[in-house]
Image 1 (cartoon, rainbow, N blue to C red):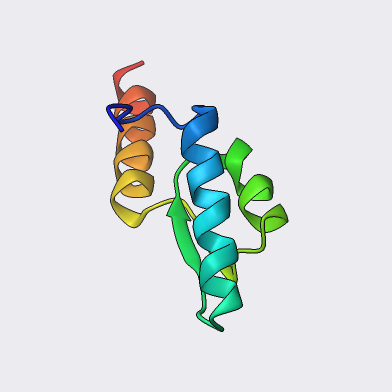
Image 2: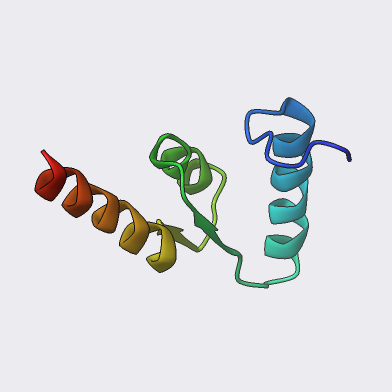
Length: 73
């Protein structure tokens, strides 16, 4: 699609929603790991069966950055 990283792209979300509908119509569970808190509710609203918010490596990196800032100030 040529939109790598563009999570606000309308075409991307149309494709995601259509894919979720097709999978659900075939009784397949649908899940997602997402790092943007503002998109979690949207994923819930389009009927993902499970939504993982945050990824362990990113959460660890953010915590490490916060510790570094704390001790460098």
